Image (cartoon, rainbow, N blue to C red; front, side, top):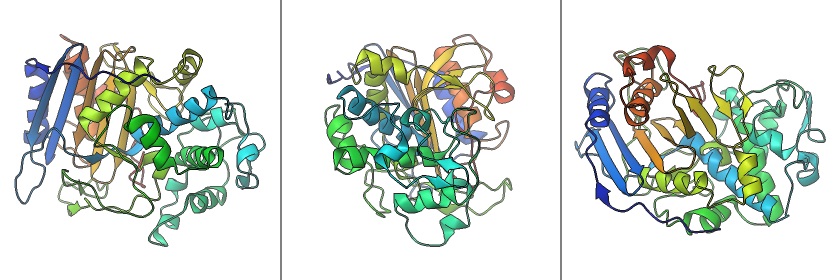
Length: 383
């Protein structure tokens, strides 16, 4: 694995992107938004709004935030590195590594492969759809999350459909730990964060609710459609229900660094790189969005394709997308889980920002009606 070389610190103007950030705060009502662009040897950083509504501190370049389902890309990358080392295979069954764990209500670990976990064709019910079960205790072990999932019927027999399931990546994380005999957090640190100098990136251990500093405060309306809904500060959040599927913390600069290295082929061998970026059609998502192994391809309203991942967790929504080779990347975060005005949710803002950056001259006004969504909000608040 090669280390990635950070983009040279040469700034450039980006009036179109900054305009979207300003509108997100002024018209969309979000507390704060920040974005970073890496384009060859240049970079741009923009922000609007605040990191904290009490102190009115501006959001900073190194502010940490919870990245939700972008965690899945880190988990999938570790799995594929283990595949390249011959420690496991994508066609291995769940049963081989986790005997007796995935069984019941149509779930059959003997017929579900690691590949099917990573591309969401396993049919495993997503435990995050069961909110009452996730309200019974303060924290959860990965095994308890799988038990919640198998208490429900499987979505479909393995390999016969597509459904986004956070339990797929909990199982993938459990397999990593079984194969290596080490914590998933340590594998992510040693294989990805440390070699790439991702100093703001981590997977919290256990039930630790802290968000390391510097960070932006996170605000949620608990996904209520009421514009006057109570706003809650959820900067401290116990994320054990999301873990390998959505529990990580990072920064915009770290996300761009990681995805530039991943898309550029510096983290995986060619065979595993091909596997990761071989996509399948999605169902119950939006047309035009395909899914690989922990990554997605978006077809923007203008017809431009972008590769990366998005993530949502209570009080934090993020995108990181770029060109197929990773030479041009954009990472963005909103420290809230709502948007007002012409946007239905933060995804509408993100799509306009992607259009402004990657589809120069395109009519970003089409983004609201036709925006491409790699993940969608659920009652769990995590995707």
